[in-house]
Image (tube, rainbow, N blue to C red; front, side, top):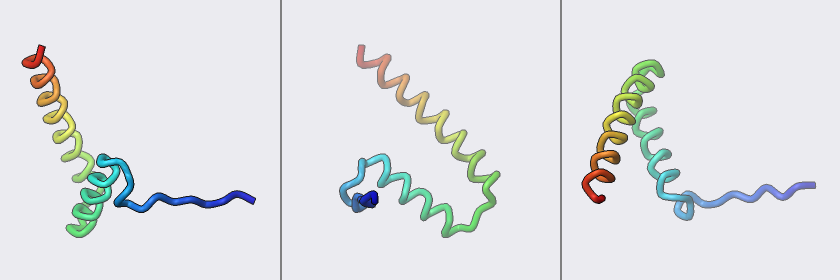
Length: 59
């Protein structure tokens, strides 16, 4: 028999907490999955560019 252990959200990694918040926000707006995934690609690109810029300016 295996023990099912769960970690409360408040103890989860910050990126997990943010992901849960984003999922809840998107679900509240009842947006089509295709729209959400397209928007998330744009957001990911934007943050990848910001990260690259931050890394390049810190060296």
